Image (cartoon, rainbow, N blue to C red; front, side, top):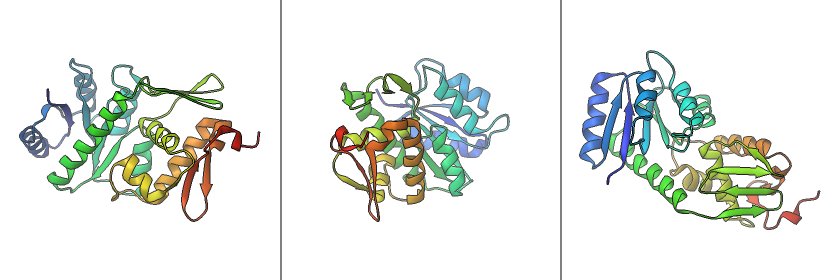
Length: 234
């Protein structure tokens, strides 16, 4: 069955345009025009496979909607793509920090939007297919459950931080440039600056505490996840 996309947009004409084109591209759709309606529709079975979320809604901000979705067990792993006229880097950073998986700035082409929808859905499906529990020194990662522990204490990560961590671990011992991370973690190379990668790596290290030392900065190149946990000086 095709993926179900919840479209949240308060501009009626744009909502109708998105609804029509996304359905024409083979997806099922559900729509909402306020934050409250978006939250209500997100919890209706079947749960959406992706939420396309406008940031500027009449009753609450899209970031608040995203926080509520991430806080609920039913929707905490549902990919969220934010759509907004706010294109400043700080706006993108805030969006990613509250758990967005992608950030699309208006005006955008429908073709680009649909390509990015498919990229986010593809990444989500790839994550669900993994059944491994990873142990690396003080770090333990439950991939299908989307849980991370450091010294048996659970660490709460956003969906994007979790994907960044698992990408680092899968490529441990190998240097990852910022451009590679933009392409493989974010799913595209445009619209997000390398400074945003640095911001996310910094926040991930802080959340991991002592285990953050497993992520090494390679000056002038990018980052490397240690090949072995004993490479870190305790």
